[in-house]
Figure (tube, helix red, strand yellow):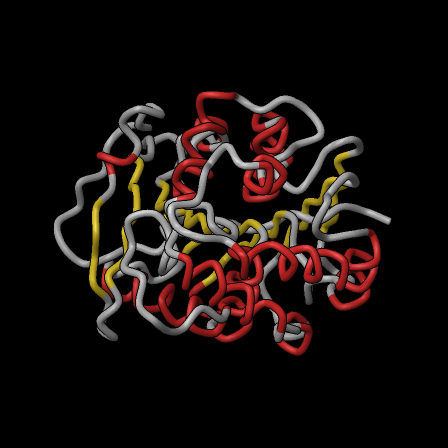
Length: 293
């Protein structure tokens, strides 16, 4: 079996461009801009200036369940100076958190609204976990808007083990969530070390995600199987997967390989669901090599 790359997608908004250099961990939250799509959803994002030498399409990054645009802060320095839009999905980070809806169809619609608002005609999209599913559905529905697709730690449907664990824990959460509770430590556990300054900030921001978003995403994911869409992806696709992924097991990757036989697959032995935090330089070089083909 071979690993898969998640694609992270960024949603951008209307308004003046305020792109800047890569923010520090301390400055990340303050670097966010917001944009409101035609449907009325306000999305936050961090825009990072590209270099003239980098060229290429804009690169949109989409994070995972209860993460936010900061999720890409370790990887971004290794993406070759590309012009980046790191988006906070609805309900996450600095984006608005409406009562409804949190399925990947709604998130894909937000991405379309984001690109339209910022007049981004085509982009390369990288997504992780929830963001990878969103990116895959978007690429299938809007092939004219996607050049290359990277799916990191993705699955066509959440496996029962991960789903059961989440249902055993998420409905019992109460606000404010303690970012240092055992559940949150388990939620952000990794097989190999991750920068602790980044991880503590990411965990705290995840704990601040509203309870209705935690449960809304979980309900939607429990009903999710996007295999029909996956079979209609036309963009060249890279899939990255760590064989110690505690959420998406080997069986999910076998099914993905059968559905996307033409995709490139890379397995990270000994690494987990967030392997791009564990070894960002290596993952960045693989993504760049794929985008430059």
